[in-house]
Image (cartoon, rainbow, N blue to C red; front, side, top):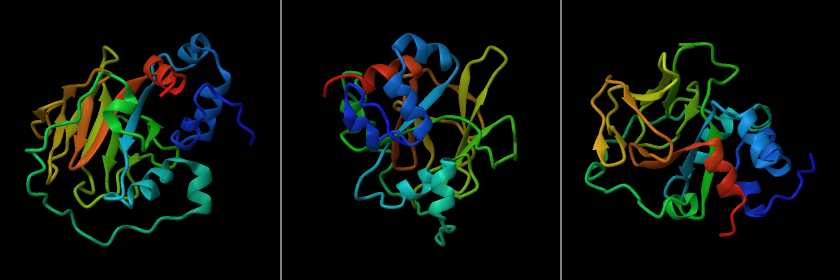
Length: 208
């Protein structure tokens, strides 16, 4: 599919979903916000130190799953010394400044092929999770997102080996924690940033 050029074409390699990329490239800001009024997005930092992350993230895209099957990882969760002591990345608010030049952005939601626990969006290393973060520091079932009665997004650590951090705070296992957009979240050793539709559209159309 030919994707119309957006203001910053570098983003064509960083948006995981072809559908979402097309919308970002062809929609006005107002139209994109209207279509994704209640959506959340997660930017995941990737690096040479996390070689399996892209394989896991591709599981969220149906086309990628069909052409690039991913086997279950054979290793157990690796306890990471010093993970809790590493401060979260900070910056001036720009996604590029927070996560660096190499990140991948995905929509936070249930996978169409995952009917388990319909009230939660599971996160973990296992290939059957809604958001698959394939890294030794991430537990097979690490955490989950949910939405409360007030439509507020919250995050729960599932009792993971290497814990979950929201900003600089360590989450108490199995205790829901509201997560506003613009928040940095660390799953094990994996840095992410939670975005809303307005933040994503602006970042994809800004000049780096």
